[in-house]
Image (cartoon, rainbow, N blue to C red; front, side):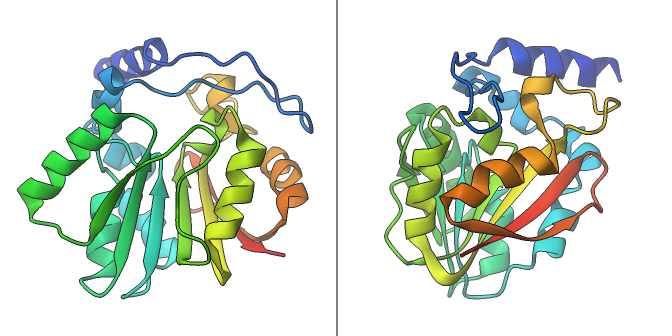
Length: 219
């Protein structure tokens, strides 16, 4: 417990707080974690706190899928996605920090994974090809966007007509989830922010200990 609490303090100290708020909900944008906080992404407790394999099973990753992991960091979810998509699939691993992508490339090399393409994105554009992606995954990332409306418009352009946008976010409705309010979101907040950008909420899954799984499709 103490180690987990210390990791949480490290995570918060490595975030740069944005000043903006969302024009629809008034939600304050959280900052983006720096590469110095990469240890938070691979902390031992993350498996038990977030159940990543259970999350991906609930989402459903089809062999041969083209997937984008936005906010990929050092590859905690990217490596899992690559194995699920298989050799005939592909994962675009997007991050705005070159140092994070360097760590990701090293992890890909160690595990001999060849179906991942690291992508240096921008704060307002994930730099994905148009109409090419089956699934865009944002794991504890959307709340950090400082240009969420522009990002969503580009994500929508990158998705195939039947593509899905999936967000994992810590439950803002639950005061017992030990994360600062800026790093949690309610279902109502997410729905209110995404629907004006051409998405509709398809389903919400609540089988994880602390996070919502919110599955959106294009209108």
